Length: 539
Ligand code: NAP
Image 1 (tube, rainbow, N blue to C red):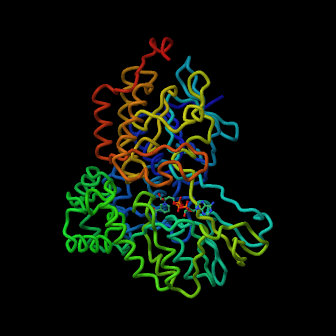
Image 2 (image 1 turned 45 degrees about the vertical axis):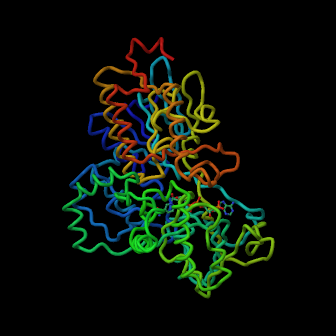
Image 3 (image 1 turned 90 degrees about the horizontal axis):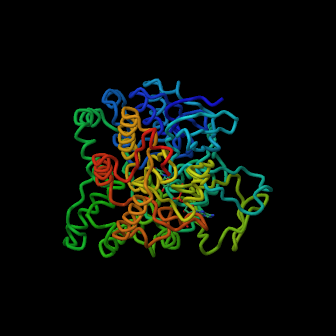
């Protein structure tokens, strides 16, 4: 017999825990189904050396409890993965959330019973749950790519994936190590591994832009200041497009005199991390402005790398800064000045496979004790499409989204009543502070569920018309930006054969929140809200 609850949440990461807290506060019975034995989602899995958040700790934290805000003490401007995991574990304990979480529970499917307007959610071990609402809080970067090379099974060394790093850590001391991939994960782990390993070889396919993190300990004065002004800080973040609180110069970079521009870029380079992309209002919108920013970064990279060949190879070219997710680094480029570190350009000399003792490219054979894949994820839809989710008339989500995800406001899709997605495709998601975005969406969903309960609404379903319009709007907004110029995980290019559509909403968290508020204010426009007696004739 399935267990009966009001709401099933899939995933006990930041979004899932916040949803559990808020739904439970309103008196709903909730079950959170989590595949691992711990909370934390990506912060539980991405334990690779050097993993830390690119969003400042004070902003990458929950806003729902001022007591929590006041009592938690972040130690660094950019928190490490262990500290973030400690934070989310603290939240789970502090708010007694674990009692509603089913750990070690991998969801294999969910199917909608149209006659009863309820979902049955099934787990790998045979257990199931019956719920009116299902909320998918499964993350956008939670299904790692399963990159392999021929001969891998015969390799005598150790192989690790950045997103499934062993809990007990890996000892690099005296080892010959390969890192494949130079996205945020590869860029973050490179300096840390280099400091321990005997030799480190980084296999790069595409050079990316990276900004220094300018990480530093949080002083007592800064901590006290932020805590005294937290409400303002949150407000500023929520009302900035990125959810990071940056207020761009309202001028185009092209309008600003060169000398003044250089000063602004230099200041941002030395302090702002991601905020570098937001120094002027149009860096991600206007090719000429972007070219100025890209050129500045290229000059900065050149200053950091001694060897001319390596410098050239590490220099990103051919795509605008920010249109692939830039990294925020802790000394990445300078690491290549170390004697024990070497770059291999696999766009020129591709990896052909493993040998029993290492890797073979089209040009050479190298021996390694450890090979680390930092090759990224099946982003946005990878985790959402893993379980077999079956809506009305036997249609699966995979079938519905065969040509790309389509949804009303990124929150729900027609044919799948009472099923909602947090920070999924069609919402600001990875283009903004995802934690802030998830709290906005949970607040919106909480109000909707309370309304449904109070008014006896048994079904909430996105309309086909609304999701078509939202898809068109998301595309229109994307066309205003430079994002579509570059193949990236923002547009499905990270997996061969994946639909090439722009996944996130690029209009910013503030505008998105206003649209959600408008939707609710209009009685949830773009959704059909059906009461018990209307249900049978619907669909
Ligand atoms: P990623 O950005 O997708 O980078 C993957 C890297 O692996 C790229 O350099 C890619 O090259 C390369 N690659 C992919 N498939 C390959 C293959 N078959 N052979 C060789 N190279 C291959 O992945 P990621 O570094 O894990 O980062 C993903 C996202 O996670 C980030 O953008 C960020 O949103 C998040 N993240 C955040 C943080 C943080 O907040 N600090 C840290 C880590 C990750 P191409 O570019 O040529 O495809």
